Length: 280
Length: 280
Image (cartoon, rainbow over all chains, first blue to last red; front, side):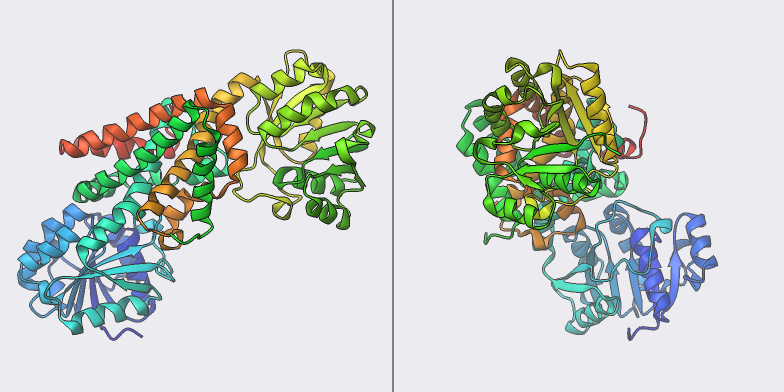
């Protein structure tokens, strides 16, 4: 049971669309917008979006909760334009994969007290309205990043919102979130794409891979524009994570070159110990 | 229907054990050996292994087909010791992940005409008898690498053997196989382990990852001894593959540092195009 009547969702891609479906299923009235008329038509046609927002997001002021479900750069661009019309909104959120710059922007435009940055870790490489599904947040982990001035009641409402969608909620500050994501999410994604490009240059198609190689290249199927904005927004932390993995690769190369079987074995044994959940 | 009466399997781990199960299901008599008495007892107790081979693989000469299901280095060690007793064996195979050095060793000990190196691309990170299952080879890809002197009839029997287990068979020479595997299998595996170690050093447990990060670190759970022997046996080709991915990572780092969004976007867009099956 979500104690909210009307939610405006700006962007009906994988996350925004899934959010619309999950809320509509719970009898919340969904006000929707997408820059692609096809997605908006489909969402309205399926009865998921109950009211369309107009050009310039006209009508957004009627929502109790507003969610921007856009790439990082688009979120940063829309916030200052729309903020003046959100005077009565109880809670404003975004769902982008980096949080520091967006939460700072929300504070800068005077939304700090009613803002909570959200990041659902749903991990699909699929994208767009057609990939959306009401169950996307079932048992997913959602990070919530309040601003330095977020009201306690606002944060509580955000927690209630996501828990109502069956997600697990973790509250942390935006800077810590972004630093963590550089390792937990952005590094794996970049590696998957680097592997994809390496295999392409070697003339190997994805269909020629076994189950392991396919798993390792699944993330490379993610949307390029979204990922460009993520890695640009989190460049410094990501650079640190890339330094660290390059160092690990060098350790193995050195042990192979030196025919140092002990160190090579440690490389794989230590990796497996971590996989098996050994204390860190 | 497999036109073979008795198969000896040396090593009852994931692949050897699954082979024993798949053959027993097809009414082939299985002669088995494992250096771990527990595995051998279990395999016999379940009725999968019908006859135990003795110390020094006593009794192996009674098999029509012999399969060594051991790590690369153990396979290289056992071949010269057992070869003199395989005078009547119709087909000798191994199932290790690299093929060049093993096929060369088989030729050197006089088994060339009746030898076919096999590599089932089953891609599990699990290992050991308890992970074995009769369906492991269902629709799996199996590479077959004849020696320079393998008889046509021997190769044909090997193809029949694996197709009888519902695997897809691809015949190629051992050197080409190993070069290909450096990219298709060993590079993804090493990356997965390097990522595991990087996350460990950053204090992040696997349970804190989303679905993408978990996929990217699954291979790191593979058996360390097995993988040590694989990468050592294929060191040169693997070094080339690692060079190539390090170069891809450098491209991204450079574009981020230069705020060159076009190149950063190309990185992800090209990765996705490959994922989507664009012609190479």
